[in-house]
Amino acid sequence: MVAGEASGDILGADLIRALRQQFPNAVFEGIGGPKMQAEGFQSLFQMDRLSVMGFVEPFKRLAELLAMRRDIIRRYTANKPVAFIGIDSPDFNTGIELKLHRAGVKTIHYVSPSVWAWRQGRIKKIKKSVDLMLCLLPFETEFYHQHNVAVCFVGHPLAGQFPEQPNSGEAREKLGLDPEAPLLCIMPGSRSGEVELLAKLFLESAEQIKKTVGSNLQLVIPAANDARHQQLVRILASKPELNVTLLEQDSHLAMEAADVVLLASGTTALEAMLLKKPMVVSYRLGELTYRLVSPFIKTSYASIPNLLANKMLVPEFIQSEATVDNLTGAVIQAFDSDQQIALAAEFTRLHRQLAVDSGAIAANAIAELLDL
Image 1 (cartoon, rainbow, N blue to C red):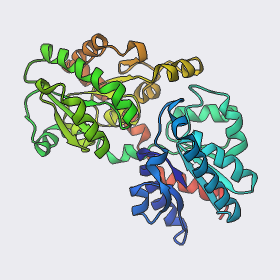
Image 2 (image 1 turned 60 degrees about the vertical axis):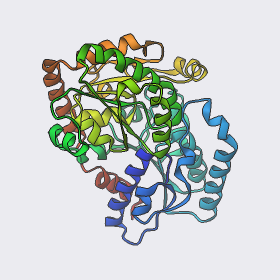
Image 3 (image 1 turned 180 degrees about the vertical axis):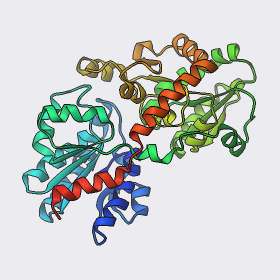
Image 4 (image 1 turned 30 degrees about the vertical axis):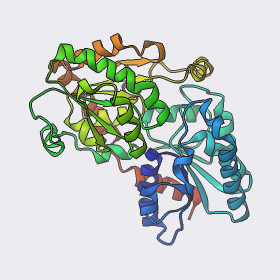
């Protein structure tokens, strides 16, 4: 198994637990994070070495990434496992899957790349590389059916980890926050590049939002890890007047406590949806990266809530649209209580659609593929 990011580590740990129910003597190894390792997984490399973003940025560590991939391929070509499971990180994992598939190893990819949204030509390589695609989102399966790739919708493990009704009061009490004052949770991303591109923009927007919502507006930022915490301490030093509460992790509590979330597009948008929180979604890439990527984008929406609903449930501001004025106006509007009630009903419906036993469904599909 190879997972390259924190979200993949969560999925991998859930899958390992489910697979152990059917294969109690199985050995799991490859690349994984602390959650997978807590389930007995042996990681051959540090997972965070794979956590690079964009199209251009990975070239900075290309030699290291290629060496890691060669080592994985050599290891599992020489000593063939029962199966190889690539968890997300498609640009890294698909190359491994192709080589191992050709060597006779059954290959599974867990988390569909956004091939239905952009770079659709990747389906040709996926078809040659993957025996089974496990999708987290229901709308993804149709694309694979069209291209005769075996696919299974497994739901999203995160959906089962969140209650249908969040408890904002309890979350605020745990974090020592004012139970009555309005609260904006700011989530500028989990990667260094994301934070550099988005944190300043989000903080400048927060300055304007505070002028309208009120001087008692609470601002909370949960840092994704120690490195991001140090990065945000440096960035916040230029905005002492905002009086931001910077947390070490606790992202779920921070979102649950919030009235509105301003966030970087990604898994965080799904988490905010599961917590029934009004949100404003934004994202920026490096200018060169965006110019290279944008011609290949084939979808109308960037955020998971909008993709699931197939309509604009929550506002999105990507690249040039990610401005202080746009974010400020959208966040202020998101504080409207009538809008929040209607949005929560939509989010609950989507939550129920995803809240299935993902690990068990995925494990059953893998067992059927392996015929063990």
